[in-house]
Amino acid sequence: MKTTDFSFELPEELIAQEPAAKRGASRLLTLDSHSGALGHRMVADLPDLVEPGTVMVFNDSRVRRARLFASSATGGRVEVLLLRREGERLWAAITTRMAKQTVGKTLCLPEGLGAEIVAVRPDERVLEFSRELDDSYLERHGHLPLPPYIRRPDSAQDASRYQTVYARNAGSSAAPTAGLHFTQELLDRLAERGVDLRFVTLHVGLGTFLPVRADNIEDHRMHEESYTVPDDTADAVNRAKAEGRAVMAVGTTSVRTLESASQNGTLAAGPGSTSIFITPGYHFRMVDQLFTNFHTPESTLLMLVSAFAGRERILAAYREAVERRYRFFSYGDAMLIR
Image (tube, rainbow, N blue to C red; front, top):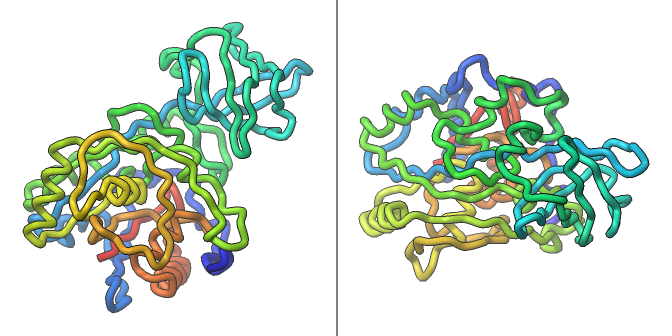
């Protein structure tokens, strides 16, 4: 299939630049993946839409303040987005002016911290810092890595609103944004409904948000991201599958974790890494339902939801969302596919 098969028209004013005034107060488009029927609800209605006994799986990864501003030896400003730690002082990262960041180039950061480019990869650079870069440094000098379509600096509000209320395992370079809609009250209402709430961890990195540059989607290669499936989550999902109860993934990162950890029809507990690229024609083994945000045109995330519900149905739903002025992307409205 062509990458352009996953394009759609989106007025720029529908790209949400700020979160909803109140967490959880977003609109919810429902899609029946069998009939294509659409419905219009609110995220607060979700407990009425999820059957008791459903296992909902959330990604509890926490976003690092992974965006740093540095200066080059010639005084130019360079933005650095840390992706993952590769050693005591080594980090994989992406930068602005990437083509100029060649081996041996040095950067200067706050508090006299230095960094040298020690390896060049097709879509990232490896930086060796002059001393260990810990979370306390990132808290002092790092910024939340808002996506580029949010055309403003990060603010104090983003410190809470660009994290899920259940985030606990730091390591992501972008938020698992479907989870941003959930308040503790909404989670409690789902649990009271008899929904089984479980968690996995997938640290969001380049694999999730790298653009598809190939003309044919088969030529795109995903980068690896690390994940962990706790024992209790694997047990709950496997019981649900054996008993014919639904498993709902909250967000595409939860989908990728559950599908990657599937082994011979069961969900395997433990750590792992994945470069899974889910496109139309994929057979889902673990996930029966999906709660997700609206995704960018020609992205791997749009291809994943198209694999789940059918490309034509998804694009028709997106056209409906545009007509009804839904808000799109990370801070936008949500979609429930069943």
